[in-house]
Length: 322
Image 1 (cartoon, one colour):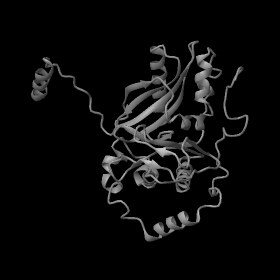
Image 2 (spheres, rainbow, N blue to C red; image 1 turned 180 degrees about the vertical axis):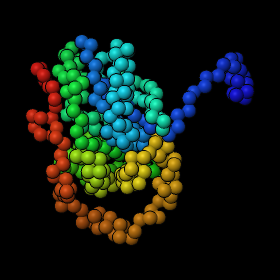
Image 3 (cartoon, rainbow, N blue to C red; image 1 turned 90 degrees about the vertical axis):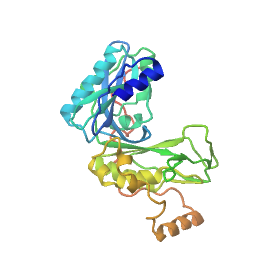
Image 4 (cartoon, one colour; image 1 turned 120 degrees about the vertical axis):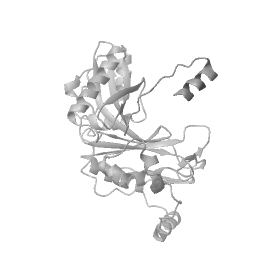
């Protein structure tokens, strides 16, 4: 403490020191909110965003394995009250830090739509971007908190152009071949294409790969299948690191915090390719040589598309003027 006070006095001429609470086993949990100009505020449940590197989210899922119904209700209520206290309108996100002792703390509010919003859309059937526009033009929310039903489980993998075996350095170059996953319950928000050059001047995210399943294990397996069919050639991407995350016992148990990568550093960032069998290289070479005849359907997922996916049933409370 004396050293900190001395450093503060030397640098700023003021020895005042702010002590921040240390949250043990922290998890990053955020709640999506919608607020209109007529005093109506609802939350659309949580998103678990604890798997991060350099405080940048890598994978998100909903619902969170860390919350039970009671804690979920408390955090949702706190999120709504925070938005109301700020007089906020439109779509936004209240972010919390959840400790291992089950206490939660306010982090910040993001006053915008977020990268991970599709997993909320896939489990609630509410089009958040659409409602942003409707609220902005003065429309009332056509549903209340009790009308929002959460179904199934959704996972989002942020596909980055980076080399996870080289300290997550950006990977630049031309995308020479591209095969994107598709199928029931799979959503891939992407703007990349074959021949597109990935430059070092922008955020390295290439796409958001999102899946929905009837439960968490179904969603996890579907994401594994989707990642297996995702081919981006010419640059290095985070597809492989996501496969490793999804196979990791800590993730399968839902027992992870914001220190996931740091805690399992040796398992994730050993010598690149050291555990890759020869058969994998042979298969990759054959794929490059022969190509693929169309986009193969993913096995075992036909009956697990989102309940919101049927035409005319995707969104609740559409109301007039939609």
